[in-house]
Image (cartoon, rainbow, N blue to C red; front, side):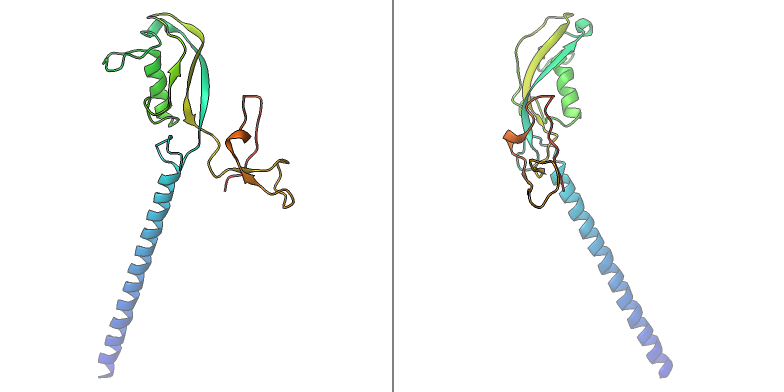
Length: 170
């Protein structure tokens, strides 16, 4: 009878240990899902979703050798389009700076023909900003209690390549 009680007790302890292990594994799985969901929200592919990603309206000035292009303007729908715009948008989408041509507010101020090169071509669009929505800063660029940090607002951002802003992101 004593041996039967020991076996029953061991079996009960083993059952409790297995259930606890299963609960811990389920908890880790849930935590992993939450981390992945939060990561997906922070790295949203939709760069025009103002709730997760800051965008900035920029003018992009670039040059290109037109020898291998059919011109600046994209021939939308053409299968063998070898335009500068098609190459530009493929690169911007691959770098996740825009979601699509349709959603970035794209405009251009000129065009070239097949084989024509350009120096100083300018296009404008909304791109994903390097400044996250949760970035903060203060006027002294230091983490001082007397000079509290405040959220980075659109008017705080650098206006050109010569200005800079040090920010904190947590």
